[in-house]
Image 1 (spheres, rainbow, N blue to C red):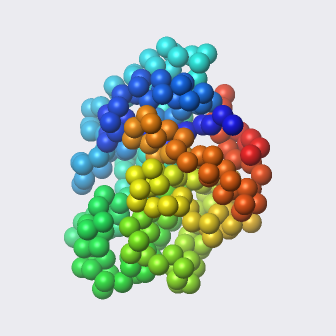
Image 2 (cartoon, helix red, strand yellow; image 1 turned 135 degrees about the vertical axis):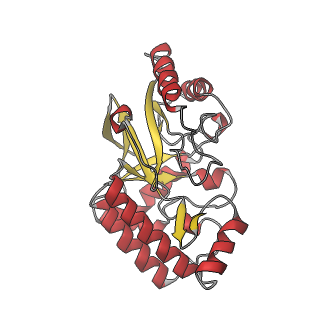
Length: 267
């Protein structure tokens, strides 16, 4: 099966390689299309976002590579659009992946996925050492930001469970996750199946969890595979396995970006 991978990172944010190197790797993998989706600017955390002044260069380089490899692969300009980003010139992007990297408290923004210790410190200090309270705050933020930003794809939806502090079998957690997912699907019906934590050996399963995939299917949501790759070798990582997961759940199709449009293809 030929794949499309729209969640990728380069040296413009926290990736290890250039845009051209990522595109060349995608050609070697015989991919249908690749999207470059570096992190949007967050003025309160500069560790892995694109910097002010780099966006014009970002688009120029994507356009250059797109033209150079036309006929070999489709290249798209995307953005991993953090919930708290103030975005200008949205029309310059072929798609936006909406997500939430932070939980906001009385004294600032706290990263959900940067480091295990950092996540626990926030849970301990601001949420009474209760991971379920933390997850509830995360989902509330995710729903709020989705309603405001209206992205094209819902990104790594259940990221709050990344480091294992949250019990994904807890009914309270599941109810909050399902409620938020259904709210967000009404705005953005495409959800990414994100395999990035598997390639980095943090998790053994994809985002979203199987129980959420069942809800997506039952409410006519659509899915798209993404690697959240920061290196060429991780493009399309675990995609064959993800297809088998989707088939087991009951999906018969997924979305790809092709010819400038999201298109449904059979599994």
